[in-house]
Amino acid sequence: MSTVPSDSKYAKSHEWVRVSGEAGTVGITDHAQHELTDIVFVELPAVGRTVKAGEACAVVESVKTASDIYSPVSGEIIEVNPAVVDNPALVNTEPHTGGWLFKLKLSAPAELDALLAPAAYEKQIAG
Image 1 (spheres, one colour):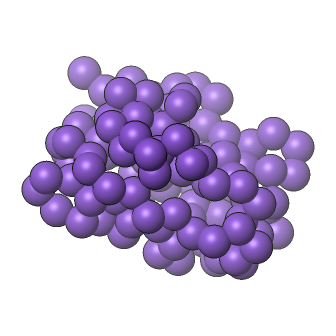
Image 2: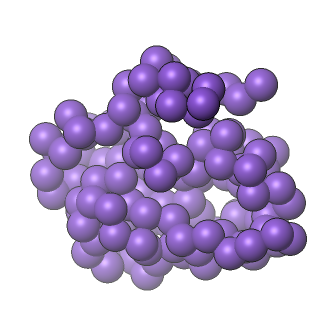
């Protein structure tokens, strides 16, 4: 059973964002990592890059496929998680904690309103 933390907002494309102040931490959901299975490679965006909501900005590769990761909100990449590059399995084992992918400074916080609340995301993945 997938877990959907209540402190995050969710994109229909299975990314989550947890906001603290002006910054958002982004990763893929537990549901997404289950669908991908064993993640073997992670490519992260460059720090300083500006992304728009819905823009592909990272890649995760599993034993099954490579998947683009989309930024759920617009902003500037301010930090990436080197731990997932060194140990991509963190995305599988800790998708909502240690397996985060990048942090960005939000340029349009109102975009958060377009994302799914935890209950709505749970409904989406329930099928």
